[in-house]
Each structure stands twice: as structure tokens, then as C-alpha cells.
Length: 134
Image (cartoon, rainbow, N blue to C red):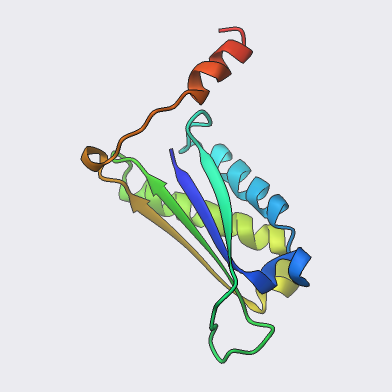
């Protein structure tokens, strides 16, 4: 964990005329989560979801949004959760740059998963161990 979802307005994406390479953004956020020390790489999932139908602020065509939602298991302190939220939004802001950030609403949120209501099966972890000779 965590499970990270990056939501973005379609006009953010470079393939839709926007300034941002979404694959690069996913990599930047994923790497930031790993470097934070709060994410186990063998359980980390980062994905991006574009939103085509949006209304942002005054509906100006240049308005964009990027929202990062990190869902984590229980056991982290309030300070650790705040640290992760800061690390993720800093990664987004650093990746998109000052000019794009000036027309983009950025947000980062950390949500705690209630483990009693979650079912998880992870075959990737064993494969990682095998690939790394362990």
C-alpha cells in the first residue's frame, strides 16, 4: 500500500492539447511515494484516470485539475499521513512546472482503508521475490 489514483481533467493531458505527459506524471508520483519511505514497493499501485466531463471554477478552457488520492492501510500517524500528502502534491507540482500549475487546481488527499472491509490478494509480491533471487 498505498493505492494511488491521479484524477485529471482531460485538458491536462498532452494528447488532448494540454501541457502534461500523464505517463510521466504517474512515474513521478509513484517514485515520490516510494522515496517517502511510507510505501511498500511490492504493494504500491499508481494509476491515472482522465475526466472528460468537468466544470472547473468559471469554466474557462484553460482551467485544469489534478487530484491525487492515496488510500493506505491503518497504522500510520497523523504526521505520516500529512507527510505523504505533501510528498505527493509536491511531486505533481514539480513535474508539471510553474506555468501549468498556474492554471491547474492541485489537491492531494490521504484516506485510510478500513482493513476489516478489504480483501486483498497479491501475486506480484511472490514474483518480485523470485525475480530478485530470493
